[in-house]
Length: 229
Picture 1 (tube, rainbow, N blue to C red):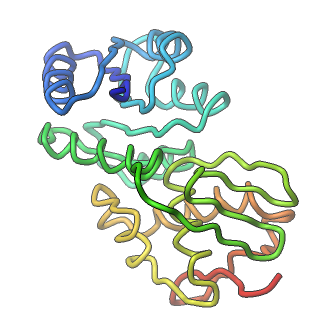
Picture 2 (picture 1 turned 30 degrees about the vertical axis):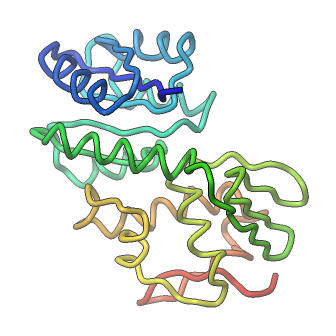
């Protein structure tokens, strides 16, 4: 069954173009023209991935994303004409997985959508490993994370980041290496993106994010998963 994608943008030309390319790629598409409509459509259509324009009438993309994030960890991709770092940080702190600046190539957008879907839902026919450090367990087959047996909901980007670290405990990853693993080319020149993702991830998996027991900062280099907790 084809994945369903929600695309929200107040420019009809962009909606039509993005929908056409996504449908050509074999995906189902539902659309919205503003943030409120996007949230309503999300709740009724349960899409596998959401594409949100930042600047929309009635409710902007950031507020729509906050409401969606309260209910679900569905992959979120932002479209924006704004290029300020503060806007990138805002999107990341909300829980964005990708951030694409207008104007953009529809084919590049489709490539990002496909990558996010693979990272989130995986591909059939493969046997994925289960990693464990202390009471933290990551199952890349079921795409689930638990600590002390309690499930933790992560965004696709947070899951990929955690899986990368826990697969090689003790190994230090630089920020650029982690960006490359995330395939986050929209963040390629924005290393602070990793710091924001790590902050969000620690808030979910650590008992005390101010005193992290799992993800250790290696100052001046990057991050690593502790071998023992």
